[in-house]
Length: 228
Length: 245
Image 1: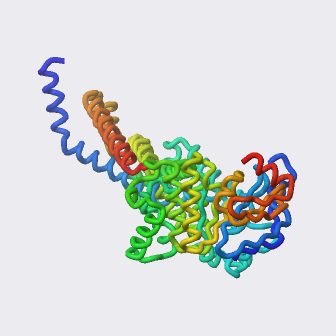
Image 2 (image 1 turned 180 degrees about the vertical axis):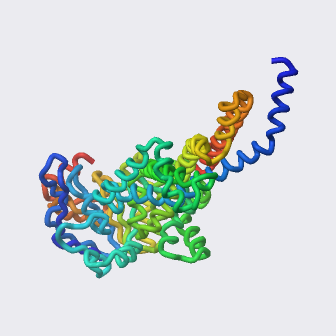
């Protein structure tokens, strides 16, 4: 590529500056809402899944089975189909099916069971004996959840959240195509429909950088919190 | 202090049928005593110990600690009663993400102590186990013997009347074993804490126990007096344990 074409590309992109900034905001909004739902609902769901496992504090074969089945059910949907089938629900909750907030509904729906499974897996790494020691001291179930489970698994939970964030960054691109906006949507609209490959490449590069940064922060934080 | 009355506990075998870990066993342990539970693997000694703080619930029988029948308590009352019974484990079971001081503080946080009182008490307990200089270390930075001393300080923190020790020295070398045993002995003598210790080594019994029960197939077959390092054994099994040691 000579300097002239490079200059042309740069001019193209800088003219799109406001649009890219807008797309970044939309992506951040979708991701933020989806992850917030995953943390607030998927986290507790994961803890319940763990505690109802055989041999755990609230071992309950029936409840564990039903919840596990529901989690698997939602997770079996291809995301794009989940999104389409949730249109009525989205309209009910948000009042619209277009825009980043509307796109957050199916994102949250997919993120909740995903994170729940990650939390359940992470908690399984805590040695049973440590929980037993807390029981022997007279800890209440709530104290065990807060101080033992979350305290001992905190590094693993941060790693799980990192995985979730990166997976759902690419889900936001899919959600963007059906009206959610965001970086993925921008890449498709310009790069694919209007044959502006440079825009597509720039957007993918932007995503690459974001993913690297998220992973870096996640690793650093997990490492800092892990004293094992 | 501790009265175990006709206790039974059985577990379902994976291949079907039942395993009688503790079979209609009674035992009385006096206040201030260091009492050993000794036997070969599978004799039911750990299960018997875990019945004392109801980590295992008996299928039949009563567990009376400090004049209170634990089997009749509500969940909340049982948690309260457990704060009066410290426990030390073979695998230490420390919280890996908490420092030594925070581990010792843990049972006090659970019991709802004030922050200032916790700090004072943690300092006292670390002094007893000679770990004051390790207060800000994490368990991963400690040796096995040091970890177990943290375990003992933690068990001691809430000023319990009873400490249950489940094979506390089985993961440690002989020299460290001695230091852990003398630590338990010191606690018994200084604070009058009743200590129940599970072991498969007669050496442990000889070194610190006042009395010891020999278990076989879930039953107490003999209670031995230990005086001046002499174990007075009457049954063949107790004698065979003596020979191993």
